[in-house]
Image (cartoon, rainbow, N blue to C red; front, side):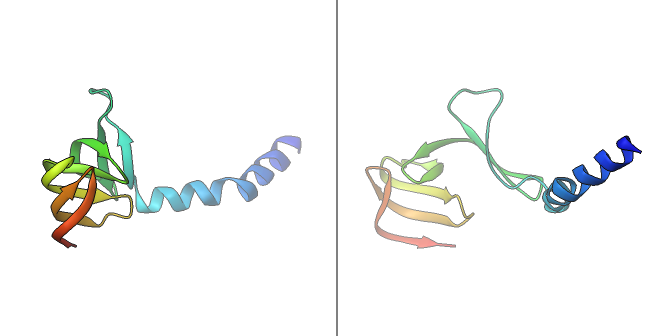
Length: 96
């Protein structure tokens, strides 16, 4: 009886949240286990970018994301490609 009650309580407070997270899969930035200070970006369990470095509020995908031309992905998944100054989108560029 106690075991059933405990399982019921655990189900009510924790299991639905875990199930919802598992339905959509892993999404977001995760530390890359093989490299220090780099990240991998997943969307619904699909690896989209690997070995990203953090610059400002975004993660560098390609190019010079410190000062120059670069391609960056933000936490919401939007992608910026264009001019960058001091790790921030600055000048002309496009956001997808």
